[in-house]
Image (cartoon, rainbow, N blue to C red; front, side, top):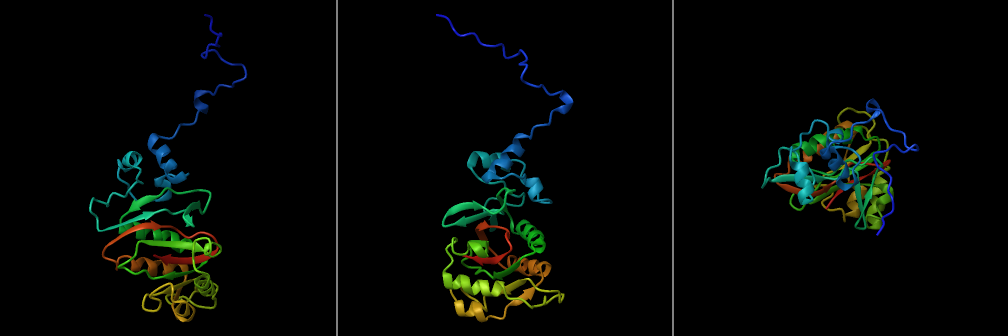
Length: 244
């Protein structure tokens, strides 16, 4: 029996240009490749979350157990944890990216979540209304841009009421008197997102982005125990932070 002749793979193909050693780019480490693969992420944990330290083995454990990397402060049985999916939106149950450069999903303690939110919210330039969550039932706290209300399952009358408040202008920040872009509504004012009339009529507190970030971040330390299954970060031009 004869076999077809094969070209010696060690011989140089004239159609292939070999790189010089100094021209070769270093390949990413296995850990970096894994981090970039989490949830379709294209950014490493170190780039996405500066200043937050992740467990050295958490990336490998995540690979083995299908779990995202976690910050060093999370221990088994922790009373407070949050899964941050910064650039992910769920529309009718379908997972969708909110931007091209996707940051990896991670598990964070309360302090690391607050640190990340403070940085990201203060840098967001759009108009937002945010609702104080119910500490006893809170499982998700997420941002929805105005065009995504209907696809995310927000009731039409609720969506219209929230949009009216998002587009409300003329307020000044209660802390620094700069033009306000964020409205904050406490549970005392709006106990449920089904309260359409209250959404339309509540006075709320209005802040610039920097002081709105401070106000929202103060809400989480007031919650003694939580296991947040989904938190994301703002995207688009305007929207609302809601909870379930």
